[in-house]
Image (cartoon, rainbow, N blue to C red):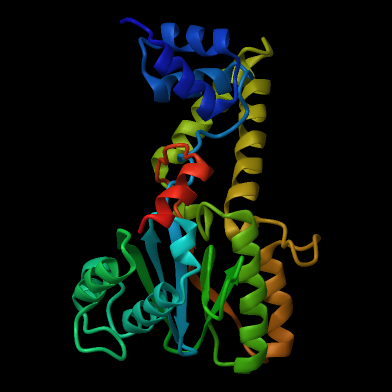
Length: 307
């Protein structure tokens, strides 16, 4: 297979490895980008995870909360200019409020009658496009609810109440004091915003992800030339570290820098007055996973002036 300059460039952007290393990786893996990423990591040339893609979309993440239930949505726009527009911000707030009354699927939110309006969310966005003069869309939505306890929330890079760049929901089930539970819940939500865990528990880590990491660690360990028994111990240790860094309950709590999140929740039970169970979390970062063309800021300004 012919290895093009474009393929080399893409791999370099994904891994940060040098041009020749990227070319060799692609040659060794018949042009397979994913396999080349793993090859570079196994060789120790690239220690970085494959980037999910440069942040591509502007817009806002919105959160609406009712104590035991909360919703988070992502509404995209073409430029950050529109994200700072009062009308756009109002629409995102209303979309988040609307999501509270749905099952959290994007389709259900889009079809629901928007809070404070007569039309559904999809049609309201269509009207906003005509008024504001820029394309926008509801990209994602999620709802969390507990029978007893709280769904705590946190908005990072907030531009207004309930609006920002990274929105997090954390569902904690407990029969204890709601205020104390909300306080530890917000701290855990802040932790999630900062660390972006892969899953809440070790069992929730996707099997294919764990298998891929283990395969990379195995190849790295065997290249050391050490006995197989030692290699197995090395793999075991690296997988343990992987889970400690990737699983929410196993991560070191950023608020105190000492306890794991699991232990921090256990410690909080004294103030709450009852046991606390983490039922799950949602972290929504604006534009994650969308490829964006590198824009010319001056051209963007010029384009906006013509709208």
